[in-house]
Image 1 (cartoon, rainbow over the protein chains, first blue to last red):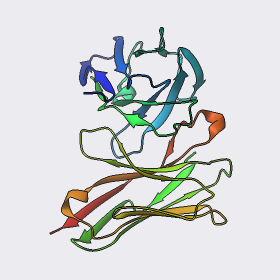
Image 2: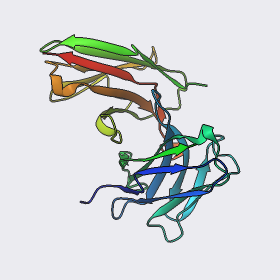
Image 3: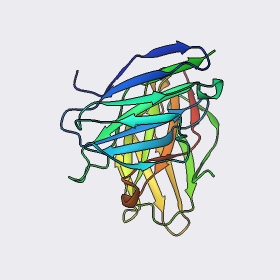
Image 4: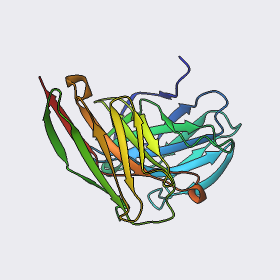
Length: 115
Length: 113
């Protein structure tokens, strides 16, 4: 399968715990995006990377959130001291990037439930 | 602040009918307007997209109509099928933000047999 993959698909945690999600983009895609989607809403942009550089962060990305893409391939999104309001689907997408590919291809998402 | 407004919230269409979903935007810097289809438990899948220098784009049963002066665009699904039942999102993005997508709130489409 050459699509975007995300792991885990589901995560249940208790309030105050830290969680980390992983995203593997489509091979050779330079851009990688993170979005958050709550029930009945459209995805909301969190941050994006061009290769290993994090170029933009949304105001939604509080200081409890951190994202990395250390070698320009896979990315991780960590949430520290989780709150119930963090419960959502976390989506990753990738695109070719500077070569002119605007199209973003999404992974299946990681559903986070904070108890 | 919702940068892309989408309507209706839900839509019921009979098989063979035309489904029409509308979106409006404010930021004239947006230069890319995709539509995504999402099934329950899945990530959004790109359906069709348009640039503002084109007024219409058609791919199979799906057509985007774009009105730059009105800052509106719409998705038309011709000959709607039960398999089209899903949530549809319009979005807008611009080059200066790395094409980060601003999504509408979505339209839940049900196509009845």
